[in-house]
Image 1 (cartoon, helix red, strand yellow):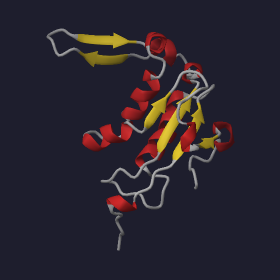
Image 2 (cartoon, rainbow, N blue to C red; image 1 turned 90 degrees about the vertical axis):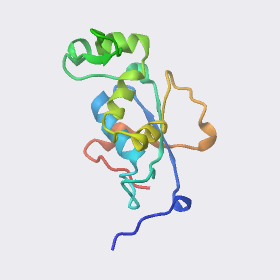
Image 3 (cartoon, rainbow, N blue to C red; image 1 turned 120 degrees about the vertical axis):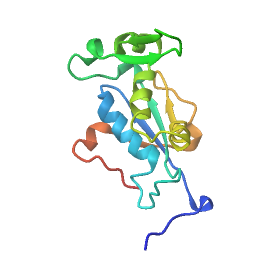
Image 4 (cartoon, rainbow, N blue to C red; image 1 turned 45 degrees about the vertical axis):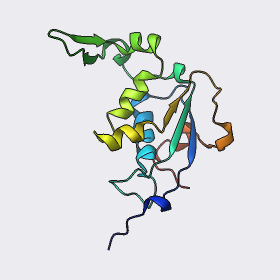
Length: 152
């Protein structure tokens, strides 16, 4: 029998990731697992059991291949003929964290739960962030290599 947790039984941790020389897609998949709570044994699909993730040094994130110049992000203004496109290179110049945020957003479920979970992602330019008092656990990407799971 599957045991589901109640709201008062849910606990959240904080994780800190340094995005220096990290690949966007691989980092986004790791972050989405943590935000959804899939790294926990108490994972419940319909509840927000995930943890908070702080990403620093977002301006040094990488894309593989020629995606930085050739990939396109599309959005629509809502008006006829209002489709807009932008490359990650130009988007990164305007808003450095937006490429990672879009990648994570597209890996989360649609709807209210996905939007609520996306608020647990905190992205900062540079190495300073205002969440020192939460004592985040540091995730070192270069040590994970083949292991995509995080154990508490």
